[in-house]
Length: 167
Image 1 (tube, rainbow, N blue to C red):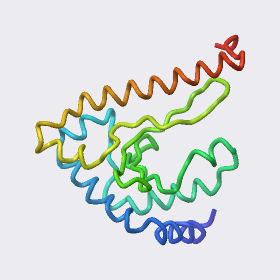
Image 2: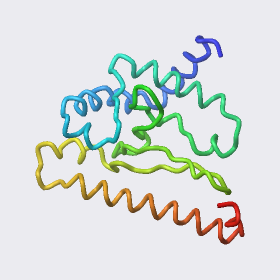
Image 3: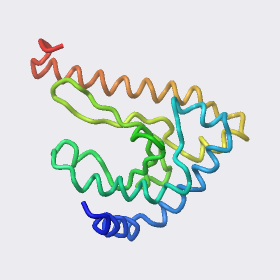
């Protein structure tokens, strides 16, 4: 894909999501200024502030190339990758809470992608540094349990479809 085509896609993204997207750089800057926050994100290597626009341009461009129905239905242009070297962590611009999540793939039939929430509300995550009443560890455990229930549901679906022989 030509870079000019990528720029067109990115400009279209900014028309729809620009106001929310402009909040990402300050959020990343805040997270990276507190090691106690970055430590809550396993193997987190935050994107550099100066790379956010280019990263989103590449993300939106990548999505335009997807042709698998499972992927085109799942991946969204309003997700902002916040990991510098991979697509592990995202912030969701479509939600007022700007949730942070990982993407996971259920690699047994019926194959599917799903989100594993790390923090459902970015503001709680950010203010936890100054507010001892916010227990991030319990939120992480709760979100892990929720993710486990999702995968358990996928395994139940496999059993209903009589696909258990593959595992």
